[in-house]
Image (tube, rainbow, N blue to C red; front, side):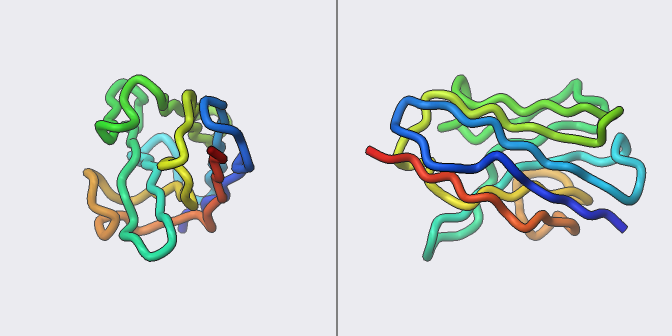
Length: 121
């Protein structure tokens, strides 16, 4: 019902920036809370940020506050994650998700394929 595709990952030095994008297709995009999660090898999938359907409410992992910004464009059916002041600890595969709410990955039904973010130190 909903297909999600991420892009924008890459290799950056510590202190650098990346902007991740997620393109959605299928059901009406504006009806869904959208979220970003990340997962490093051997670790659990971790909540990073989410945004309400209207874009008026956002939530962030504590370590991302002040560095990351989530936004959405309901006309283009896209959601973004601007990441600044990147640290080695941010290295992970980043996924966008829809069809859920809150900070638990298990609550989300739709997932993208993931995009790799690697921060060198």
